[in-house]
Length: 284
Length: 238
Ligand SMILES: Nc1ncnc2c1ncn2[C@@H]1O[C@H](COP(=O)(O)OP(=O)(O)OP(=O)(O)O)[C@@H](O)[C@H]1O
Ligand SMILES: [Mg+2]
Image (cartoon, rainbow over all chains, first blue to last red):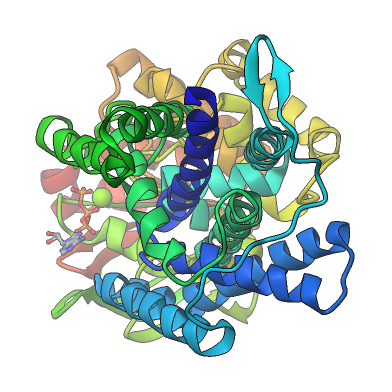
């Protein structure tokens, strides 16, 4: 049970990782990220409804996530960043609200089950009961994060990505277009959100309200772990997921949201930069 | 190779450059000297597009580049090694150099082998960088970071290099080393615009020099001519 909780936590970590991707290049995040997860999940469900085979649905859903991420960058973020304003905060929140009501109008208010092609019987792994579905979450999260980290370390474009996050002006001087890099980071962050949606939906359900529940937890994870440590979000995500399953077991499922909030408040009070984050030192 | 004409630029409402005109011919080293706050750095930033000129023209190899995005100007062959060096601290020395050649290299794979020749040349010029190739750039000493900043600019195989105060904050021995490097670049035929506090050393390595005062070029001439100019002698070579 704690293990399933921890695996759920990996999904929070994945969403929080999406925050890190865009924060690295642009010091901005998409407050509508939860809606990106939800919309991509609904879209993937529709792909299945239209008769698309399961394994084609996944790339389809991911592409949709990338497209949404690019739309967010273009419509909510780019102009604000050019004006050096914080307008992206309001704009991405508005995008989230729009996403929410669009989902209600297109797919309805009810939670819908998300089918899976995996067997649902629990397996015994090291004496722990675990379903193939939960294992798929772990595999999915680590594959996506691993591939993105590989991309950042092993390709020149990835290094340019890191260069922009280290020093945007200097990166421009090397011929790296910061604008394009920020676009790329939003695309990747949309991909990550879609992956989170596709992974978690078969376990929970798909519904417009999944957005706000997930974003809150991803946000707690991001704040606790900081916005620059991929390792940190995984660890904090696992801990939060495990804590949630413990509290809902011992205190009742109504307490499920409590650990996230407590963690968030504690982190903001104690370490505003995140437990794993390096304090951002402004160079003079 | 690089021509700046009647350039105006500034920050917000304050206009720093008030009609700067200068030229860097191909294969020459040109020095730009002047007191603190004269606008030397601002000139370089306006040339490389880090700030947008409000008036005037900048041409690189005959092509007008003013108003272009910084990354586009870089792709057209201008390498600006900025004040304060601005190496990518978290990245390795070698990654910093590879990023210098970003414009010439494939985006995904095979960039390392494609950069090998250029990388070899830079390592030959700066053996210290080769020793420290895997170290993160932020952990280098100030002098090493300066070598890296110069090496990174060379990796671009640029038409012109702008070098802003390479001696800034360095110990006297290291400053000598920096000027030796500049001399070697000059022998190699690199086209260079050099901003320096050490006016004397700057004049020694350059073919031509401009003295900047309050956002304008006040005096210009060959080093020999400037050495005869009393104003220059009193203010900068005293
Ligand atoms: N980012 C900025 N915002 C506003 N004003 C600036 C900025 N940078 C420089 N200035 C102003 O522009 C003027 C010229 O500065 P600049 O840095 O070009 O001088 P400099 O000749 O490079 O001086 P130094 O030798 O100290 O490097 C100064 O008065 C400075 O205060
Ligand atoms: Mg300066």
